[in-house]
Image 1 (cartoon, helix red, strand yellow):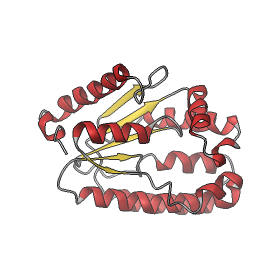
Image 2 (cartoon, helix red, strand yellow):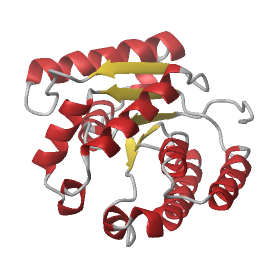
Image 3 (cartoon, helix red, strand yellow):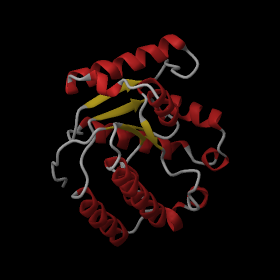
Length: 221
């Protein structure tokens, strides 16, 4: 489905809702001095509505994210230095597939979404490194609860379980770029210094392995 273009100089952090993507993005940005590109959540006028009525808002939400993530990748590609971003267009299909399989998105809507996605992917380069933050459903739900976004608290456990399964399936077959899988159960890379250092060293070692010039990824702000 995806044209194998050359890799760009970006790190993408992906994972199920609540796993800690935004927190790790901040850490990686600070540690390596990278320009950060955040997932479009705070300025999303549809997200809250979606969690209250998935059938009505599934398609417009996916189109909103698809458009924003395509623009984010284009902006990152034009940046002269390496970048880091919170989720991206590559994992976007995980949500669309889940919603289509569950009947929240009509077949013609999903077909249109896929047509747009394929067209967009033909114009962007894959990342230098994809980081998949893995967590079991109980861990993800606990972190969602602590985060405290009202619209996420009403979602049934079955939805989170299916979403986590889709993530696991997707990244078990991901081969568009080098992939680093980090098991986050039992890790607290926000508050625990040892855990933070452990994760940073995993990322540093992977970058050294795939790039060979770690200094490009270690610039101070």
